[in-house]
Image (tube, rainbow, N blue to C red; front, side, top):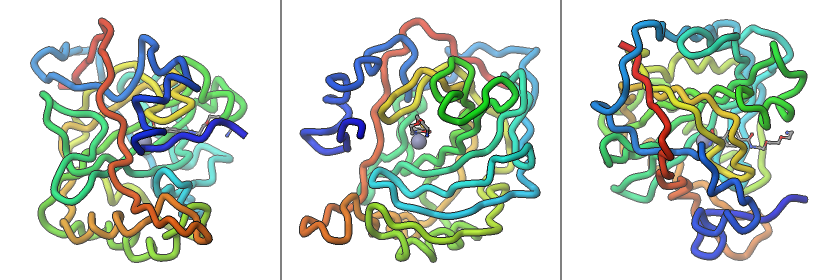
Length: 261
Ligand SMILES: NCCOCCOCCNC(=O)c1ccc(S(N)(=O)=O)cc1
Ligand SMILES: [Zn+2]
């Protein structure tokens, strides 16, 4: 089902347009954010995340990233405010990262990449019945992007890195209950926002992007744990280390990036 894609030379971002022509569309993600070209909108209010009664379910390796899934059967964990007209329900979060010592984020700021980027994926359950339906609608998804830079140990990230050995191979999954992503948020919720897409196939142009300006700090050691994950399955004799699983910035095509105060 679906076409095989990856981050390698043959199946990587520069070849995705062959099976996913929307790759050359007018609202593709990620983009390079140029802060002093972003327009400052007074009526762009603060975003509010309500992850308190969080209901994480499992953590898995889908062959592209490591993903933590949430129970999205009600409005317990939502993001609202800012550019959003409705509350959007948290569905999953995952990461993108680089190889040792260089870039790995998908969005860049004035051409600068970060070591990694966390995506918290939410969907508009007010207007759409399922995630799948929302994922193809122009206002269906809201993804909160958080940059990770290397520095001190992150005091809570170990809760994730400690279980990565359980999901080393593509297709592996394990229980992961009671994790509250509030602990991964930086102190400031100031953000940039623009209309874009999924950054992996099927590249649907269905995402309202909200990128936090303040990165969180994680240690090189913690980041290194992500690089022990594999793109490949357990019975695959080729062991491909999971790293550089990021799409580079795409043409802005006249889009406006707005900035919260
Ligand atoms: N599951 C029912 C059908 O859904 C079809 C579309 O979903 C395809 C799966 N991919 C995603 O949901 C998906 C979600 C977020 C991002 S990203 N990296 O832009 O945050 C990329 C991809
Ligand atoms: Zn992502």
